[in-house]
Length: 532
Image 1 (cartoon, rainbow, N blue to C red):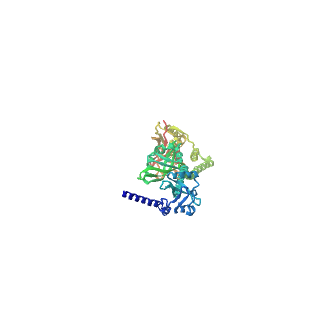
Image 2: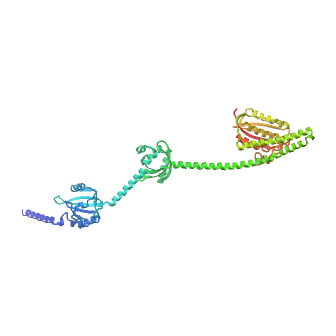
Image 3: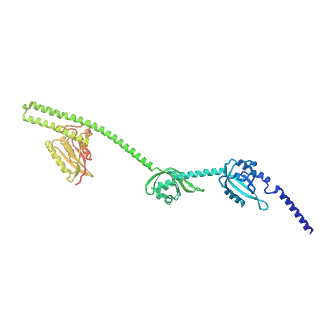
């Protein structure tokens, strides 16, 4: 019994000691002296309020941040630091939340200067041993730098969003599988679709590329280098219209390095390409015009040289027959009474030869001028060659008969040519006359023809005196005036073969010659084949 009483007394003594300890301010939970040093070492702002929201304590960080001295704020109501961004009702709502268990959130508090400061506020209650509200303990973390960063980020996002929507170039993001993940309004317009949603369902390679295999080539290039710049591709819009774009794009990879998307910019250069092609065409056309001008200039110089040479030949060659005409006619006038009839006939024949020579010169001159001035009008006909040659031979058979020369037409009657009758007749007349001139008495001239594809090759062959190798190169050239007397001293104009070449070429043919002195000469020329 005594032991129990002794224990009871000890418990009562301990209880008294505990009561004294509780009454000692040094052991109270809410003892500012205990926490002051620790709270002043906290980098965040700390403020302690009583139940009436009167400020009981602010730490050094609070005073520094909000520009207060403890003496100026202790005892003030908490509303002194309320921001203007929230009305009183909102602050009352926050206070009720704190009392009911605590509150945390972003809020603006006011500095002494009136400047508002963004903070992350965490507020809780301090209760006494009876469980009653004793004080409010709040920590405010300065969010100024965070808000600046968030604002900068938001500004960047806004700028990107604005750029994304307003940029005239196409901005896109696509998957490796060939589907669009995102595209801006410029891209929707470029591809001619009605909405972004519609475009999201297309197959990029099949529906947007002119050549679907180009998509694979582009992917290979991006994956090889990590990016591409100004890569030219041909695309098509919804209506099938072709366009040319320059693509600059890169890959998007996950943490393992796997490609999960492509993003890039498309610049429509279709009009630039059209202008470039048009400019290239203009340059090519200009080069062609310049070439034509140079050719025309060269041709004009050539024509002028030929004209000068031609007139020089005419002046030289006409002088001799005119002198003969003048001398013979003058002799007849003065001495006709003393001449016999046979002598008169002889003089008349010579006068006729001279006149015929002048006439031949004039005919050649007229034909040449018609060719060079474009005045030679051709009427292309389908002509039977054999009968045509017979008619030509009939015109000159008198000349051949004078030298007892036989002119043989060996042409197949089934051959027809296309050409102008008058032009080809002039060629035959010149060539046959030329053969008569250089074939001795009793000789032979043979005219034949072979068909070679779409052309007929005509041959005028004689067994005359032939032409030397040196003189062969002078034929058909106006810059090499070549004329010799015939086997009976016939005088030529020197222009017949030049005209033959011009006329044959006008009729889409060619002319050439083979000859051997003492054996004979063969002239070849081609004519377009006609229809039977």
